[in-house]
Length: 140
Image (cartoon, rainbow, N blue to C red):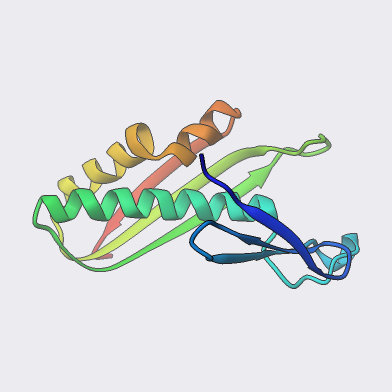
């Protein structure tokens, strides 16, 4: 079982989450909603988790295929439901940008495997009704 401990550290809504290894993530609400704007919004953290989960998958797959990834970035754009509580992620688009000696077909396949098979965060979002799309750019 995974254990995360969350503790309020400042103001009303600034919290720090600590995992079993001691890694810390700070979360807060916006100043418009009474927060101090001193941390990541929890829903944005979910998209960060999507990026991290898929990035690890993709690099692992490409390393096994002996592809040399010199640089790798991911842009994630999300749109939440309007006028609903809770307001879930309705549309999320992920853009993978890889540079190096990377075969374009292998890069696409690695991203496809991550987004459609291995990434638990992607599947969690899909099961929540998110329209999840993605694209791959190699040596743009």
